[in-house]
Structure formats: structure tokens, C-alpha cells
Image (tube, rainbow, N blue to C red; front, top):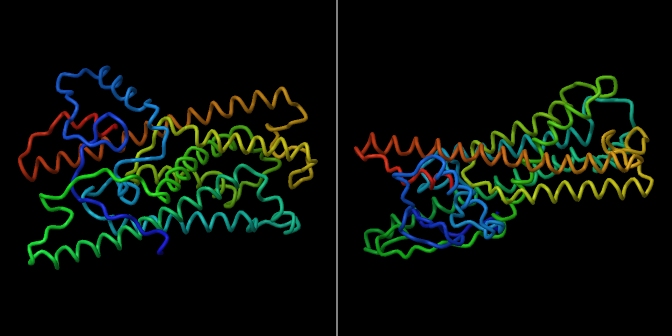
Length: 341
């Protein structure tokens, strides 16, 4: 996987101040006397910085690790296995969706040609891409870190320090291009998958028309379930301001649906609207639906953002408790905001 080679990472922890992304400081915010409301205000102040619109992060290895491991260690083997299982499941669901597995009564050519006109399938394709890329990045980093640590152990007798030596210079690396692409696709996939599941079962599903079979559940429920598991397993952050990525994704699809309608396109049943709620023959109602749909995307993204904050805080608390038990260290309240940064 030569194209997925990741840069060498320092195993030493780096404290990042609340300034521009990538800046390094030994300072830690003092919150010993902070009230919950002050902490929330500080969290919002940090999260709504305009520099966070960029797809950049000071710790690239977070995109190949799980939250539930020592962040100073290479990606856990079980997490690498999980990433490949997730990618395999998404690809299997996508193949079944393209083939309409288990269903009859329609020409296969129609299924293939009109598969890309549905938002559900756009989201599924995005899920497949991010899962495959995430698995590749985690595997490449896993192999690279193992080789690097082995080389450092072999060089230790000669007195040469490695990345973890006291004299090493700490720098915040820029996020590599493939990591940025994975971050964008992963953020889109999480929000869009959950939005598709909610919208389909509330506003689209019709028992008289849609078959409630295994394929329907896989495509319209398993997608969001797998992405929710991914939110709980992964270690990389999800930025609140990155809501514009899934917003742009959905906006592009809505624009496509309008162009498709104007060009005389039809759905698999030869109807002029791909979705009943997205009927451009009724432009006023459909425009309102689009606005509400985009607002719902923001709401879903915000909920997922809050979930990953909770994940990071729980993981940090568990690491603190373990350190306190092993070393008799007192928990430092100054890391509370770091867990939410």
C-alpha cells in the first residue's frame, strides 16, 4: 500500500494551546475554579474558531488509532482488524444494493443505470470509500510504527536516541492529504448516513410500495449503525464547523435531482420524482423540504459532534483513573477541556 504510507509520528504527547491549529505550547488551560457554564463557553469559543474550518489537525496518528488505546502506541491490532471488517461490510452492502439482491421483477439494466440517482446510494458509496481509506491508513501506520520501533530498539545500544529521546524536537505535523480526504469522507458519511436512515423511515418508507426485507434494512439502517460504531471506536475529532461538508454533499445531490428532473429523468418505476418528498413538479413545497432537510443535516451533525465529545471525555477519564491506580497520581482537572478540544 505504497500510496498510504504515513509519516513517522513522535510517541511523546504534545500539548496544543487554543491558538491556531498546529501551534504547540506546554501550557494547559486552568479550569480548577471553572464552573460548568464557563467550561461550556470555553468549549464553544474553541470549537467556533474560523481556523478550524480547515481539514488540518496537529496529531495525524489520531486518524489511525482507536480512542480506547494508549495514544502513545501504534494502532491496536484489533482496531486494524475492525477497520477491515467495517470496510468489508460496507462493500458487501453496496454490492447487494447494486444487484438488488434477493429481489425480482425488474430488468437488471434498469437497476444498474438508475442506482446512482438515489441519495441513499450516494451516501453508501461515500461510506465505502471512507471505510476502505480508513482501513488502508490504519494498516500502513500499524506496519510503519512496528518497523520504526524495531529499528529504534536495534539502534538503542549504540546510544542514538529515537523519536522518543529527551533531545527530540517536538513539531506539530501537517495532516497528510490522504488523512484529510479520509476525514472529509468520514464526516460526510456519519452525518448523511444517520440523516438518510431517519428521513427514509419517517418520510419515504411506504409499506404498500417498499419491501421490508434484509436488503432494505441493510441499506437504510445498517449504514447508520455502522457509522455510529465508527464514531465510538475512532480517535480522531469531529469538528462542529465541518458541518459544511455534509451540507455541501446534500446540496450537490439536491441540485442533481433538480437537473435530473429538468432533463426528463425518472425513477425505477418511471415516475418523474426520485423521492415523493422531492417532487420538483411542486417547486414551492420541494424548496421548503430542501431547506428543512439542510437544517436537519446541521442538527444531526451537531448531535454526532456531541457524541464524540462524550466519547473523548469518557476515554480520557478512564486513562486518568488507570494512571492514578498504577502510579498513585492525582487526577488533573486541567485536562477536562483538553478532552473536549
